[in-house]
Length: 591
Image 1 (cartoon, rainbow, N blue to C red):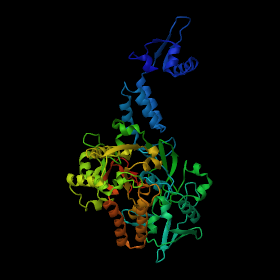
Image 2: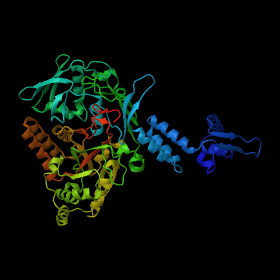
Image 3: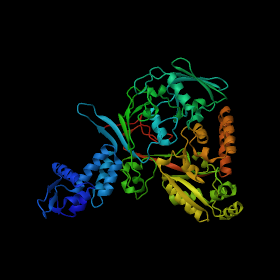
Image 4: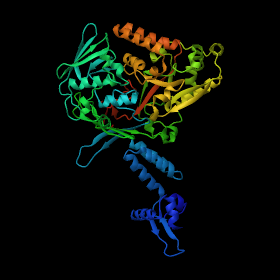
């Protein structure tokens, strides 16, 4: 109404208008328009004087400016967790005002550390921060993405976990574990007094239920591929019997997918349980909506209560990704390295930098007919997509040219010089006929994908980029119908995550590699599980070397992870997934 009828008039200036015109502006009937006008008048936002008699027009005057009301409504929506509607409101109605910049200023203060106090209660330490990706799944049996795995580790717990700093496996729910000499039988001894978030004690029956469920038709059944039986031996002893030796089975149990669930999902229906699942981790899930994830500290966590009282993770609208002016400063936290022209946090803030334990890569779909069936063509594309050139052109988080999954290996492997003569020879050998290649790319890799498509076009290789959103990541057909794709992998648990990359039911390797290569990979993995550490590394390296040599995977770059934090925030470190663990965070008051 304000946009249509007030124009640039001063507040309180009346304008003549008919009820029919108002109904048209409000997309409703004249009868409903009257009800809306009465409500706005009761709220002291307008003054409405209906015309009496034929030919007498009604008069409308606005008693408030649009901008303060728009800010109030947008902030209210944001405080209720509906950031998407906040931005939609500002984008639609804030074009001729400074409401959006003012909202972003407020939003920057809204994120970060907050001390919230209710009347008569002790102040709560809350950490609130934004992310640009939704949760795909909090079911450990389905988990596939680093963000989801990070949240799973906060909500649930595992029998054992891998301590990155100590570089060894440490107790979790199990305080002790043993295996026989062959590595075919593993026994875990559970702690007393480990509680689920609903107050019930965790036992070996819950653990057995979890692993039997995991062994079903789930993407993470790879963890149980060699398991013959899972046997509860009393309430606090769990035994695994294996078909074949696995000398690192305890490392398998460190995986986020091995997180323990309550037996029979605490008596709830499957669909109902995943609306607000419970675990035994340091944080319980207090709220889960498409726009907000709220975690609350679990006071009875067996390993000690977290210092934070709660964490609120705001899922920002997709619009924010394409419009950097919408980014709160805190959004630069995890994946991006601000350029000199971008706003950076206050100079007193502290910065953490870590090279991602994984890489960004291109993978060919060998289950589709096309030019990619030619190894010569794949080699030509590998040479065209010269990793140092990509980093030089795009910069940002792209920190190190990749020749391997791991940055430490890439640092020791030479990347050859850009050689047009060899590229032309490989293209001639391949017999490429100009066919268009379907190129799958998630929206987070769209910049990389455009660079790749342009680089290939310079050599006459035609591509059609198929961009997928977070809503489409569980639709396997979006990826399977492409000839190649760009993706990233993070090896949070080193060897086990490398095995997961090949065996996970929803990973690209499972969809793209032909049966012969997949069978060969599984045979090498089985041999690796029986070997000592050195032998295991050689066998897994053999898999990577073959995929590189045959140009099935084209390694691009390793990302640099960044985070800025206020100096009063203590216990900050980036974990192997590239996220900050919430459990050890605390705030030094008056810092």
